[in-house]
Length: 145
Image 1: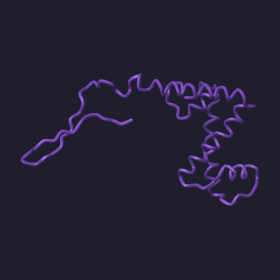
Image 2: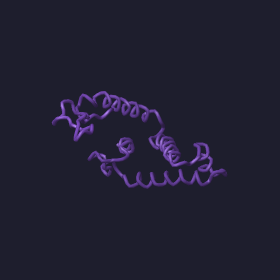
Image 3: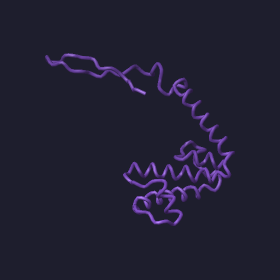
Image 4: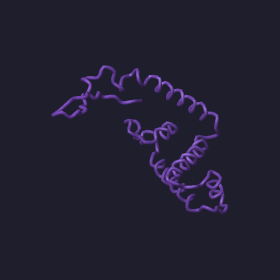
């Protein structure tokens, strides 16, 4: 979404051509926070939650669903930081097999430990701060509900 809050106007001052920024008038005519802007995105998000709710009814337990999703998230987040661990490496380490890149697998494992710590602090959905709209992990709160 391109943000345009005004325009540049060429002007001459003391014989030198300059550009002056002229902001748009307030209030904006069609603000980006208008409901029309987010209706389609909101509908897509609601459909994704509905699909997740349907899938969660098909799996043996929500913990099983979280097991895979959280490990994948941990890997992707750690790879942003430069780790070279794979999902196979992580599963091998959890099964007790020897892995070649122990430092990278340990980085992912630390991420998982941090997630478990946060998850254990949410004993009930009421403990989750998403009720006030500030939760960084709304999917966890959704699955606990």
